[in-house]
Structure formats: C-alpha cells, structure tokens
Length: 65
Image (cartoon, rainbow, N blue to C red; front, top):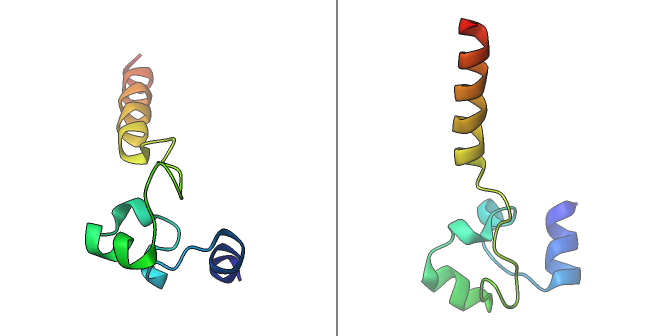
C-alpha cells in the first residue's frame, strides 16, 4: 500500500526492497528509476545507525550510575 503510494504519487520507481530507503540503492538503480537524491527525492534526515549507537551509549552510562 505505502509502496504503491510512493510510486504513484512521488513517481519513485526504485526496486521494492528499497522503496523505504532509496538512498541505499546503487547509483545504477537510482539512475534507472530517475531518482536524484537531494533533488527528486530528499536525503535521509536521520542516520538511524548513529542514533542507535548514541542512545545505547547513553543508556549504558545511565545504567552504570
């Protein structure tokens, strides 16, 4: 449902496995889909891997007291 919205309304045609994270696509996949990150599709706002590491570090610090 969400993927079809993205394809139909935002005109994104990346492979289904990448529909929620097109920035993970290869340059060839992006080019064939007509996607230019930062122009036709925004760059990610949050780096979830870095956020996770930061949250885990803070949590570990709190647990140690």
